[in-house]
Image (cartoon, rainbow, N blue to C red; front, side, top):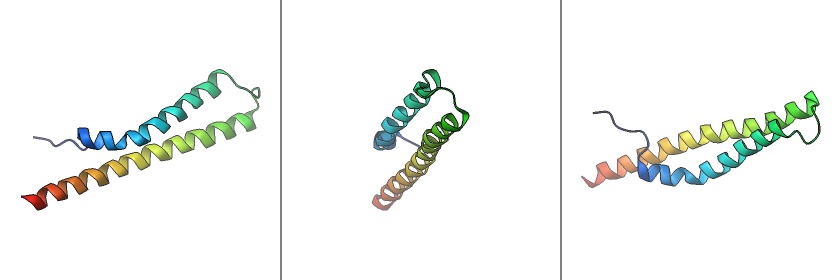
Length: 81
């Protein structure tokens, strides 16, 4: 039987990262649909680079944090047996 990487409790611990990720995705969509400063390639590229890069880094951080939480929980469970 395959073991899940993230169980329910780990996902609950990671919700603190899902909320800011949702906000970043909202702003990426808002910048794409409603360009506030027109369509200047420099400004638009800078906006998407900053917000998109932050979102990508947050996804990577969330994944590794979830793995760390999951492995720490497994070690604690193994220590109690």
